[in-house]
Length: 133
Image (tube, rainbow, N blue to C red):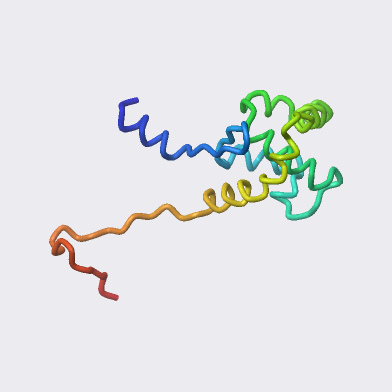
């Protein structure tokens, strides 16, 4: 991997902060984990565990090491216990109040189109250009 690849990867893998949590961006992998746990952020239906648990689980999935999360999700009761322990942190109440804004931004960023304008090589610099229809 060269320097350009490393920089590209760093920009593509935006990190989010919520209190002292560092959250990874939403990926196909984290979406699969959320779906597997029937998280309301994926299903659109409040789960039997409630919105508080689903929010804590979303944050847990995006902040803990991926291999650890995968192992826990495959063993449902261990995942539940791990999320509850995660949610018991002293500053978690403050984090939970700010979580909706951060989660909403993460979802918006994950679903935003990544596009760059294309300008033909013979276009005049500084002049507006549009492609003929």
